[in-house]
Image (cartoon, rainbow, N blue to C red):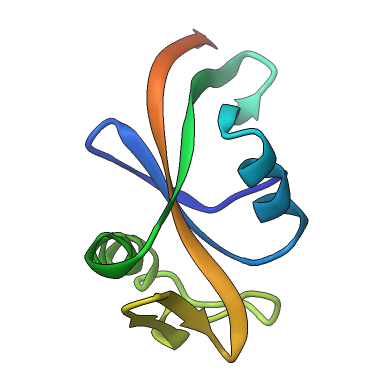
Length: 119
């Protein structure tokens, strides 16, 4: 499932509304994440990482939201995205426009990658 994330201190931080993704992560917190950047068939990078999902709340959630906002606020939101200014934090975790949401961390335990670059 696609996710928006920030890499920070050896972990991935993310934010999402509740739903199938959260249900799946709660049932099996051992996860694998793949990130690809493809410029063209001769210039690409791919990273695969494994780790453990954990929901954040309280101060940890607020800190993670601050890191996420610092990364994403500079981007102009599109018609299909939710502006970062709408992220609000409470002691129970963040809320997004009245919808149930969560902040999470994936503590990475292993990473590998490949690339191809032509001049």
